[in-house]
Image (cartoon, rainbow, N blue to C red; front, side, top):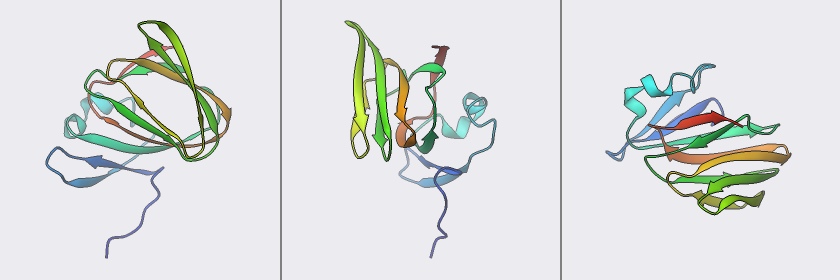
Length: 127
């Protein structure tokens, strides 16, 4: 039987080849994501604890992103062709962020967020 793990410390890489691979989360994981050639294809499943507003906007040019709020309350802010759109997420609700949309979050009540996203090509800019 496979061992259990904490999804905040071990992410899951869903490869294009239908494999599921655990990925250790290090303090510099996101800083070095672009150098991780093994994560450029497929999807990455991550769980984050949010205690404060995001400090950056992010955008995924290679695919859509699923955000599922496990606990807490968060306003997701998307930079759409029609201007900024705010979508309020409560625990137990999810949203699909369209490919190429810049987005950030304002945390109303701290909690956990599960995210499924394309590993490669993620862009960031300051809020």
